[in-house]
Length: 273
Image (tube, rainbow, N blue to C red):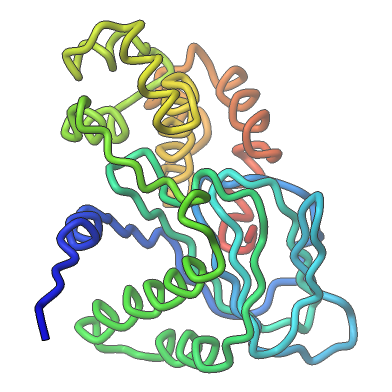
């Protein structure tokens, strides 16, 4: 038989960048179902409950009562609510998956997905108990990619952000995503990519479904998420790092796009799924 190459798919696969930003296991009775949005993708694995109260994940169109042996996917920037009862045991993984930094593969997905995956749920629990760092390094990304594969199977390719932007500098997009602040402008982004601003904005929006300004907003939210969730920085320090004029404007910006204040997010991050 002849050999069939999948060079295009291989190229895309090699361009994927997975960054796991959060991994937690336990119970937390303060997730009350309040709707919010995070700049990361969320996987929530249900291990079972010791009470009869309902735990659920929901958005504007779907409501999933959490069941033992199931895991749930909430895409980045999607408004959703999570309620965890006092007896619900879970594992949470939060991650980013980019073809180039700042443009998440799941950015255009607008729904929660429910999976019956007892094997993945049990693996998530076991990984948390592993002490050896070298095993963590392989098994945690492996589990995350396994779940990503399940998500891909439920989605049409058109729902995924798998577009290559040959005209633009990938290195420039990566630079901006990691360094942008409230002072960064679309003109600066266009200059870095050596493209006229109007041409850049038009092509960027056509190929990605979001404007360059929305791209910058998401990059700032990502940086804020990482700084706040580290627990090392107070809100006013994050505001200063991201070059907002003051803490008030940063807090208003963060709440507008996530549904929670940065103060509340910082305190509840390890349970706000």
